[in-house]
Length: 157
Image (cartoon, rainbow, N blue to C red; front, top):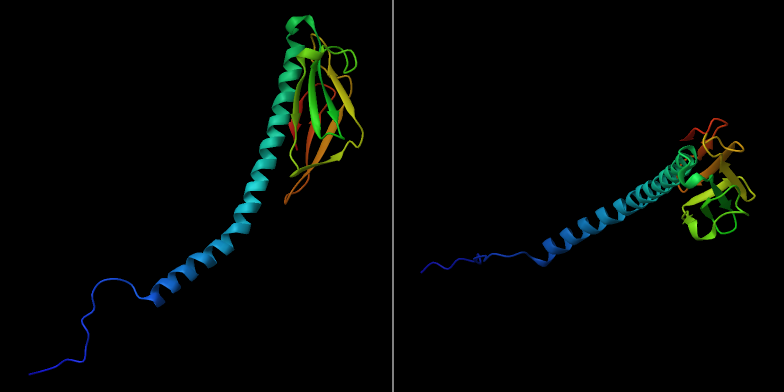
């Protein structure tokens, strides 16, 4: 009778094979997490800037179209890191129950202006009462700005 020293292998994985697969998956996760984190912060910052730009454009359009026969404006509160969009000729004389506030996140740091800023778009023309550049430093990206020129054009640079 012939006896074989070979064991017949039944299906399945050995412990070594499982450990190798777990090590490969773990190392891929460690490498990809910083890349994903950077991409996520950059995308979130860009999204916040686009939202602020669109709200400024909408506020200007309301003044231009003479909605409710009123001017509209935006007020930057640098302490609270937020914009207040209001109805009225200035932030001090605004209609309080018409305010809309938006806070910008911590990954979007405001560089300039360093003081509270009020920008009001004139009724009927939509031209701003002053030119403003909001300079932001997004986390992990180059500085970006939202510019409002003397004609009322609003764009990101």
